[in-house]
Amino acid sequence: MLNKFSTLSLSTFTVLFVTLFFSVGTFAQSLRYSDQEQANEGPETPADLVVINYDGSNSVAFATGVTYIGGARFRPEITGPFTGGELQFVQFFYSQAAAALTIKVYDAGTATEPGTLLVDQPIDLGTLTGNAWNQVELGTYVTITGNDLWICLEVDDANNFVYGADNGVGYDPDGDWVNALQGDGWQHLIDLAPPAHMWNIRGVVDDTLVPVELTSFTANVNNNGQVVLNWSTATELNNQMFEIERRSKESQFITIGYVEGYGTTTEPQEYFYLDNTVETGFYVYRLKQIDFGGQFEYSDEIEVEVNGPLTFGLEQNYPNPFNPSTNIKYSVPENGFVNLSVYNLVGEEVSVLVSGQVNAGFYEIEFDATALPSGIYFYQLQAGDFVETKKMVLMK
Image 1 (cartoon, rainbow, N blue to C red):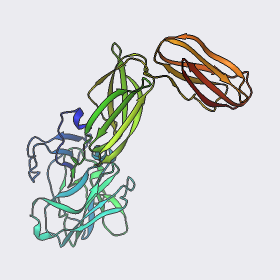
Image 2: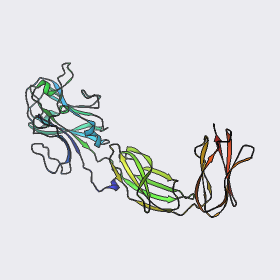
Image 3: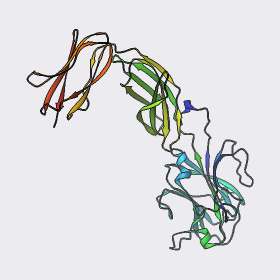
Image 4: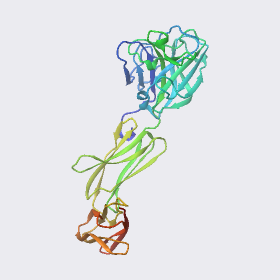
């Protein structure tokens, strides 16, 4: 979101929180600001911590095999809002001793098994506190792409599930994945050890890296009476595009164009948009910054007055080449006689588009060449001492 656009402060960390439970009811997933330490959920969290969690009670442990990987699949609807942030820590409830523990984080695979292994980090068991929540910093941070993210622990030589699993309300099968490493692949915990439980595993994401910070936004009128918009950003996070909106003094905003954003970047960026559809009058502009998740924020509004062209001007026709018609724009800064004619390659006049007194302003006229053969033509604007000629191509 645009830093300048909103006063909402971003949190320091986001927790992808999997506490896993059994329920015959509907699974409830929430995104909220944590205003206090949650019961039995330590370690303590700051007041502005954003928590994504599966609702339920705290940990229980139960018997299972010797070596396995257990973890949770965080779906795109969970990770998407934090695209561009970094997974920096993994939290888990260490309920019983193990011979070895290894953090494993995987990128998107399929709905039933993870993809590329991104983190394979052994844990120093001497740093852990038993029967309590523990937090381990990753040696390599993982950039959140908005795809699936699997956060898992591999347990060696254990007679029990050494990290907690919850039962309670809101069981979700994406929170109870387990691989017994016996060739059976990834299965649900409920299939191996009923009733339904889900792992107590969290991923802590730094989502304050680079907000979209707008540093300037200006509007100026050039010599042709067109409005030139310029704006710049200091940093950008998940920025898909800017939508340019305009209104006249008594009208509503309309969308007049789009400019693609730079996604996520910590480098300053410059943007430009030329509005060549204005007439004389007073205009208000604003930017609508849209991220890849569809969320948006508006910039401050800026005003500009267009008094008319400062110089004569003749623009390139559009489309070009054309068949059978094309549009020609021109501008005159003062009232006077104007002639706009079309000529063939040998200099013969084949059409007169304008010939007479014209008031100062911007004009657009259509040239219909239905009766003419294919070829190269020239159109010329004459007004007082001003003469300008441009080439166009008719292709039938």
